Length: 243
Length: 143
Image (cartoon, chains in turn orange, red):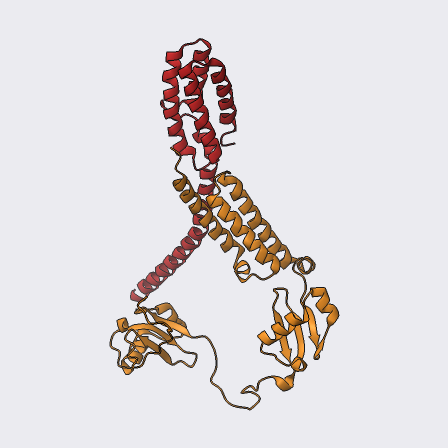
């Protein structure tokens, strides 16, 4: 006979994996919620997926077509906005300058419908408390404010002071959970012998003792072993347990 | 000879890696596609699965026979057939429940119960009304 829980379970499987496949096709843009439209669209797609799973008063197929339709149009729009700059601008909008050379551009604020209190909040959020320090502030299409401070207020860099620095770059994972990642070792032109030698020099005889190891950009090895030997543990709890 | 063998082994390994990578890429495309196809089939299987697949799930046919029996006042025959129809419906529901609306299942349940009640009190008018309502529901089921 009709088993409501079983039907919901099967529909959850359909809804969950369809959503997974569709969002994977739509890519990272949906996750980053690039524009307001993407944000609202994401919520709508999620809502349809929820109905697909639990609304038994209508056929799963009807909801699925809705879900597929939203995913298809999102994909088409993404494609069109990448291929055609003009349509992209029309659909996504353009970034708007709201402060230039320390002066607030009121007309643009009104156009974007942002209150002055919101603007100052966004500035403070970016670490700017004095509006005269701002050279340029741009309201981006994802609702965030990009701020360029005047050169006098920008932090000093090692280059300004002619200080030699070690090269920056990416660290490469070489051990994870006691397992050596040979592919990454090869990428950094190292081998297992080198790795074991490095471990031995730190008093570690077995790779199994290592939880995580990285080759840093300066070719040095960072090692974290399972046994931490921390003498004093910081306690940030504010309530005596047990929980 | 040794060098030649080594080259052959290296080439074989190289092709093996390429083969595995192509297979992985193919599966990455094929598995989601097959999953979606399977889901679509499940969601649209109702119109096919409501049709009889054996000897004990001939619901529509049985209701038609009940209609004939009721018109001829063969109440015993009609009574046997409505019991068969209820069992047949339970069997059909098990396979169509994933692709039809819950309301349709409940409505057909109710209609079958009313037909059964009608046969008990030998109310042919009410039964015929219900039977035609059943035909309509059956026609719309999984469409």
